Image (tube, rainbow, N blue to C red; front, side):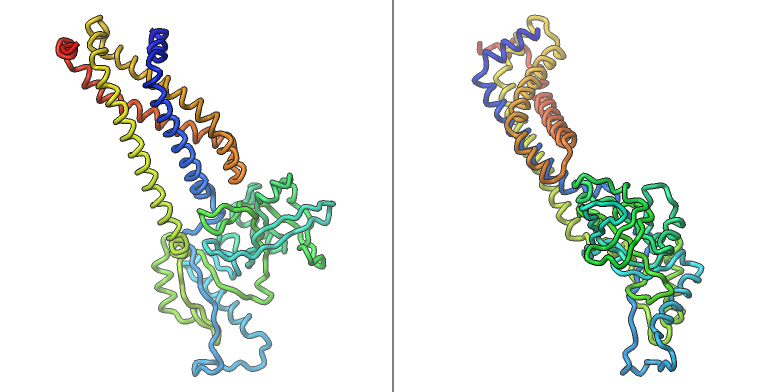
Length: 411
């Protein structure tokens, strides 16, 4: 049976060669477009390194000396620091608040990037660790929901930051230099260009990316600042789950949560809203891309349906003869489907030979693993195979319903 099928395919090579070319082009298009879509969407499948749920941000502002609401301060050297500390303490004491921190570039879903390079000093190493620095008080670990890669709890991360030690995350640029970020655990490092202060790496955490759709080339550096020193930047807090409405009501009705003398907090915004606003344009592009992909697949499958429909119309007489010779409908459909899969296999071999060098270049530029590229090709072939099955089923079923006498009438 198989030999007869292969012989038939060989004898009809003129018709089959154009179908193989069509299948090869379809496989190549789906493979290339699928790889580009995967490269674009792959960061969204990876952890962002923090938790945006129940997190709110506040801007820190001061009353101008020309304002009628300005409160004079006598005999106090740094009233801003003490006033802001009082506000943080009051927010922390609120029953609806879990934790409060002040920060600078601490939260994700913004496009700020403060790049810093760390050089190891306890061991000779010329490769620098490059990261986006996020500065804040030790409570930043709890507010952001940092996740340790060594199994430490959030409280332990806060204790590490309280000791002045740094938290860092895996870095693609560092690993591509042949280094493992885990080897930096406990290492002593200095900032590039500033060797006066030596810092210890307290733990390794998940990389905190700026958005969910942006791949992270560098790492993340959590730089601690004590609340006993000068406090500056914005205030962020984590509300207890399900207490958002109650906290907003308290913040609105109790001025002491918002202002201390000439320092006040404003623009209470949830990190969820910041996330939505930051990623709105990217999400729109993703949705447009998905629609285009679905349109492309629909167009391709309609093309396959037309090709195989025309092919089945030419084989009505052949199908009738096989039915007269005792073949069942299942036997005929298996033969037709087997022919389609053989032609698809030939097309896949051609595509793999011609397109693989181009795809390997894409893989190198986008840091795709070879197995990911192979998986995308397998999905593309599976989609085309599904299209062939669907395209063959209806015209073959219709052709097999025709009585042999009617089908062979014109012979």
